[in-house]
Length: 431
Image (tube, rainbow, N blue to C red):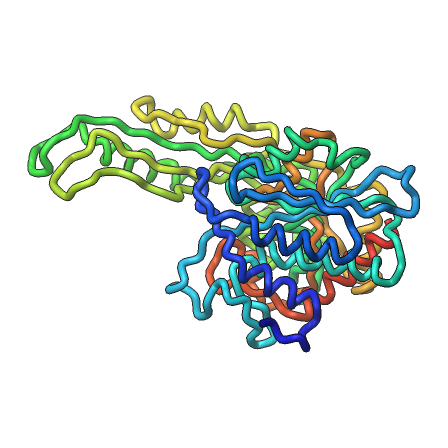
């Protein structure tokens, strides 16, 4: 059992980590059902009506609506995902699914992505309801399955089959934004106002099967290896957008450095450098290889998976260039393709998020940024809902927070979770 002396937000996050909701992709997942039922039971204890949707066995989504004081205002969707990427226990210094607190941090798969935010959402809402308060407007609380597989068995199906869950909503907040970075010894917060497009592709090479001892010029594995190496070594050019230009200007204002070299300017953000640099260009990272079945048999087919993240609006252009890079002998199959998004850093919700951070960490600047990855906000965009990343965390300067997304020894400071709960509750109370 989680130590009852810990703050409630930490206890909830720890409990959620203990549900092994590993998602291996392609429909291979342990499932979110028990975690969804845990969330649903918590929401019911707060007096809310809960709905579940399980379109595929064990791939469970859960939703509740919190009535606001002014129901004439558009509703706000506050959402998270319950699945996590797998964790290889032998690589970790702790059990990745034990949800332990050590060195004033909560450790485990999901501590960063994103069972931390799920717990912050739940406890922020609880703060209001237990005090007899209401949020300013209706809140749609949604917890999705399958986000780590592009949401194809989660948010995409919810949006398709239960759009009424989001009736009256025009905006949403979720993960990967609102956290602090340290820029030349000065703290700043990153607010996510856009996401790169997602294209997951499979490279397929074909050749002639044969004995492994032969001279063999038509080897599928060799063809694939050459294509993967060519693609993995491609350095895509800088392609700035209004959001990344605003990010660079914000970093320049903090450091006094020029915006003329974006990569060098991003280096001032310390551990967050790689996360920011990926937002300046398309990225193509090989992530899996499959070929062969015996040491002395040359296979007739070899495959590779490539994670492609594209600057919004350049998807077709990039796909055409991918084929040129790998050559005509390689077939490119699109496994998942989803939209990119970019929203101006302005408006009442943006102002409210900035103000909430300012009330809890006065004088610290908030800078917009483009997420190099993606969230379930992409699915909600098909309903005309504008999504932002706002999972507020005040973090230590030396913590490589962004490096722990899908990494080893994922962890988040206890005090950061408490901070996030308070900021979120403030936002929901006032916006």
